[in-house]
Length: 487
Image (cartoon, rainbow, N blue to C red):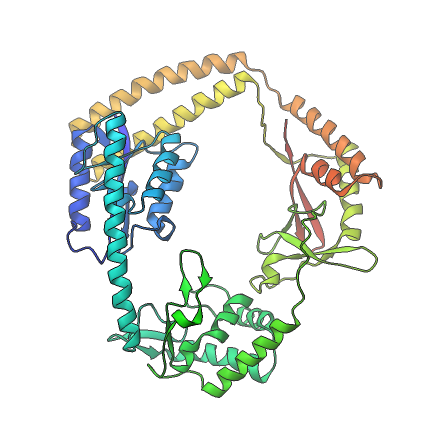
C-alpha cells in the first residue's frame, strides 16, 4: 500500500483536455486499482496555467516541496497525462529526476509506461511531443495577443488603481488615490521612493496584492505608462527577465481613462533619470565581513546587511527590509558596538552562565542515527493512519478497505515500537557531553574573535561554528544569541 498525490492542471488554451473533476475521478480510480491511497489534502490543482514553466504553478511547487521534504508524505504522483506534469522536456526531466532521488514516482493514468530502457525512451517521446505542441501553441497565442495590443486590447491584469469590467480597465477610486498620492509625493514634494514606501506602510496603504510597499514597488508605479492610458506589450523577455529592444515593443496610446496627466508623468520620468544619474556604483569586491549573515532584525526577521563604512573603518549594519521600505523600524548598529557585547556574552557563557541553544548534530553516533530513523518511520506510519482514516471519511475507501489498511499499519507499528525500545536501552544520554563539547568550541571561538591579529574570515568562521544567529532588538537595545552544536 502506498500514499499518493494527484496533480490536476487545466490550461485555458487547450480545449481537448478533461475537466478538473474528470481528471480527479480518473486519478482516484487509477489509485484504487493500484493499491494507492490519495488523501483529499494531496489533490493539487492549478487552473488556467501553462505547463511550460513550473515556477509559475503554485500548487505544483507546493507539491514538489512536500515531495522533497525529509519525510516526503507520499510515494507517487498521479497525473491524467504527462503533459499535465510539464510541457517543457528539460523541466520534466529535471523534476522527475529530483523526485526520483526522494523515491517519489510520477505515473500517468492514460499513458502507461513499460519498465526499463524502453520505458525511458517512451517517456522522452511523450515529453518531446508535449513540448512541441506547447511551443506551437505559444506562437499562435503571442500572435493573437500582439494583434489584440495593436487594437488597444489588454493581455494582462491592470495595475494598482484599476480593475477590469467588460474587458476594459476602469478606475478604482480608493486605489487611485494611493497612486495619485505617490506621484504627488515624488513629483511635487521631491520625496524619494524609499521615503514614500515607508510612509505608505506607516499609514496602512497596501499594494495591489494587499502587501507592503517597497521602494521598487513605488518606482514601478512611477514608471508605468498605464496610468496615462498607454498600453505597452512585448517589452520584456519573460524567460530571461531582460528588457527587449524598444523596436520590438507594441505601444498603443489613449486606450483607457488616464489616472495621471501626461505632464506629471513626464516630470516623474525626468526626476527618476536624475536620481539614476546620481546613484553611485556599487563596489565589485566580494569581501565578506565577519558578521555577515549572523545578524537578524527582531521586527521583521530579515538579515542585517552591511550599510556603509566610516572613514575610521567602523562598519554599520542595517535591516535589509528597512532598506527596501518594508520594515518600519531602523536597526542600524555599528561593529564597534557589537564586538564588545559578543565577546562579553561568550565570556559569560564560559564562566558558567546558562546556555540556551538548539543542538544541530551533524555527525551523530550510530545509535542516534538508528533511533532517529525508527522514530521517523513511526511518525510516517502515524501520518499514514490519519490519511487512510481521512480517505474513508471522504468516501474514497470503503469500511472494509479501511479496516484492512489499518491492520497492516498496526502490525508494522508494533514491530517498529519494539525495535525502538531495544535501541533506546542501548543508548545513554549524551546531553552533558554535548554541553561540554559546545563550551570547548565557544572557548576556541572567543580566543579567535578577541584576538586583534586574526582575519575577518577567521572571526566569521569561528562565530558561525557556535552561533546560528544573533537577533538584534533595537527598541530594547538587546542581542539574543542562538547557539548550536556542529560536531
